[in-house]
Length: 173
Image 1 (cartoon, rainbow, N blue to C red):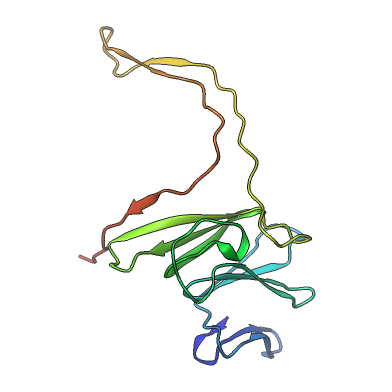
Image 2 (image 1 turned 90 degrees about the vertical axis):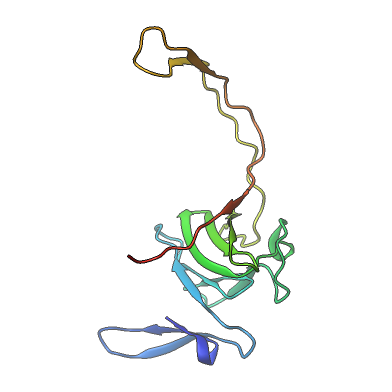
């Protein structure tokens, strides 16, 4: 659990009710925690307002994966990647973390990908260029026999990148 007010990450043993401090830093304000659900990874990921860190639960080692206290929006490797106002975070595959951020005006947000988080080499490295081979398809746009077909070309090889998204406020009715 995160203890935001005391800048700590704590572990609670539910059987013994013992509380252990995993990480303590006077300058770190943890806000979001997610664990790596994949076998043999033993990692916990923690996001503060502008950065993401990984804790190896076997050794206790903490490694900063992205960002710093500056809080800008910039792609890059490791701590050169800058994040603004993290609002959510989750592990998507054994080596990828998705981070949702919002802009200063709170009207726009971004989904950012932290990729290739290898427990033996915690520095993120770029994903290889995806290579997929998909045959062209031609499908009618409706069930009508006179419908105009739409065509799709094979997926091309290009680097993966995150694009800005716009979000709208959620309201309860």
